Image (cartoon, rainbow, N blue to C red; front, side, top):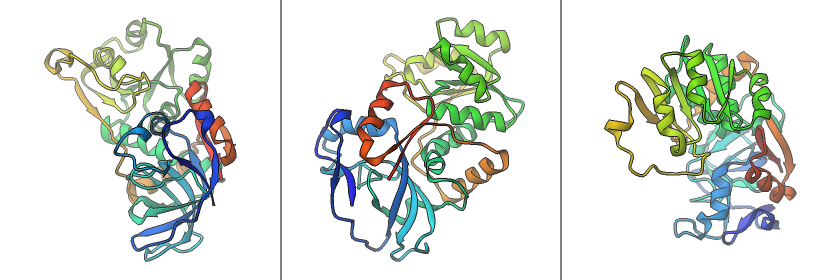
Length: 322
């Protein structure tokens, strides 16, 4: 089969497709014929940094999500040819992932996908919409008439969060650092499009004088202190992303930096279930949500897909067809 195999850290342009053996099925694992997968920043991190660390056993096929069909159900309840999605649980790190024509995956990480979608559209959903769904429902417990601020609104995750939050019936504000992308935020459903130019506090309080009810923090520690100050009393901030490139916050004082009555939480997208995936697909279908795809590549163009991800010019999900 064709696969993208890491033998160490490398630059995006060094990624290449190789011929390797199709994995042998074993109990507790199913063989999936991968039809499409989304590109994620965590895979860029594995390629550029983590592949040189002890916890990544090389060689490794990376990729934390995929969509496709059951090629061999092994001892599972799946049927050959059944449409499925798979994500997280160690894919692409602890065991070989999705950057291949076939992936041998733990049965517990594979879920039915009883939806009528083309492979590219389906490939834009698993990790991105699962993370957005969990952040909004579990992290923020978002419900009308809440107002919500999505920081990093033009990222793939931010776009999905805006789409979902709007479909919940909430007032949605979203940020971008580019004036040229304000129109894009409006087009995907944001009620208020905010330029993150140092005047964000004034812009937020123009619409929510007492602060916004909920904040989905996708930029991460780099803007967390400001996000906490933008939040209304008894509001919630959920940290899900690190688009700002800063992973930790030195000198953070919870007593002083978290305003009284504001709650700070996070969402870690490592625990999908069939019930949650069913809920996501049902909600997408009922509300007519279309995943926003930035560009579709073929597996042979994997280096170009990673270059686009690193350029930060992709407004939407980058999807690869196999």
